[in-house]
Image (cartoon, rainbow, N blue to C red; front, side, top):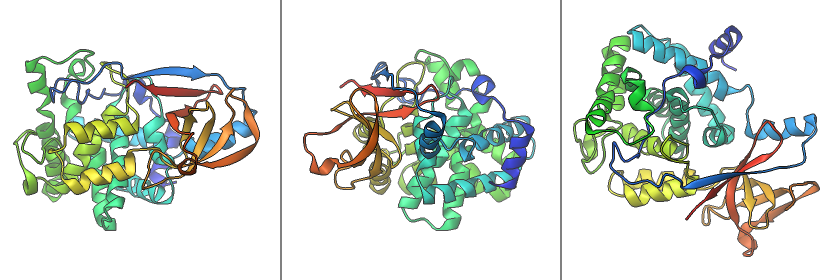
Length: 367
């Protein structure tokens, strides 16, 4: 664990979900004037026989990373945002250390990716949103084979991409209905506000970072803001962060709507924003984030629940699964391995995640 993060942990974790700034609702019919179904997903709970403490800990260790980097990052990012809001210098060394730790973790396994996709919080904080966007950005950057220093810069930009929103009224950011035209115009000031905050805190040496923050809402076809830039006029990192920013918003609940599964989120982005992002970045999104990451849990049409062991690049919705619970929710004494590509009768109906109460919560898509 990085020393600076460990120091923050010993000082006590902050409760961002209770007092942090709220993230705005991307694609809520406000910024993009795109109609998104408000109740795309209904959630149900399947009660499962409680696990014994050792068994439960073993399961959570694989998908929760409990006490790990994901939660250690929260107070650090919160502190950075507060310093930027006050116009103070930020501890860039600690932020870079966090970004480096994220990169190494994502290289090794998908624990951070699973956490970013399936961890539930009571409120939708800009801090958690920024951490998730950083994780998704690194995942795409690695798939695009960026050099080490490029990945580090991408991770830093992902963490700070929405810092301008700390200067926007909380009432606008968490408004449960569509924004008015005046409120949209106010919200669209956040890229420039973030640009100014980065330069004020870090100076001209980090102009590249400020430019990415300002360009994250620009689009390949010129439909973005604040300057309506096109194509090569937009930094590639801003394009990556821009697409995963939308993806993160769609895969997490917002006041106006329920969340989408990763598959349906990517499907919506590709169909709705087909000219907004370059092809190679859209393909990276499809390849890395459109299905079910290794280590995540899924429910089959047989009502069995299993864990994804291997992905299938040619058929991303048919990975290899380790079946852990039978159709009645009872844990199997001996798990079995099923390659869905070889069993046409079986298919995944929804992703699930294990929570602290001892049962899986299942998310169902409504077509």
